[in-house]
Image (cartoon, rainbow, N blue to C red; front, side, top):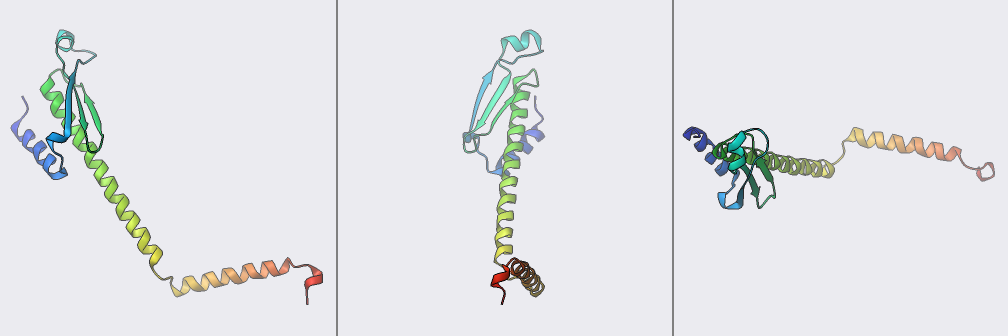
Length: 134
């Protein structure tokens, strides 16, 4: 029912993300909504759960179980892929932040900081009591 090229692309995507079929729990549920007697008699809704990440997917868009299985797997892989990308981006951002924090400040930056400190000192010296002035 599903094109062999699409099946191959799906299995390649599984391999590229490092997801194993053994890590997926699959169950079938009776669908709801339009579809008539077919939907009422057969369990066409597909529920997938990826154990390592805990991501859950439920698909009941089609009348056939085979199409719902395929679509649920595609959705699951999209969610896993987006999570991996987000985690990589967060790691990269954390590494970049640490690198920025460790680098030495530029000479211009040091001069600006000293000028701010001088101005702050001048403001504080104006707050002294008159009796404390010498």
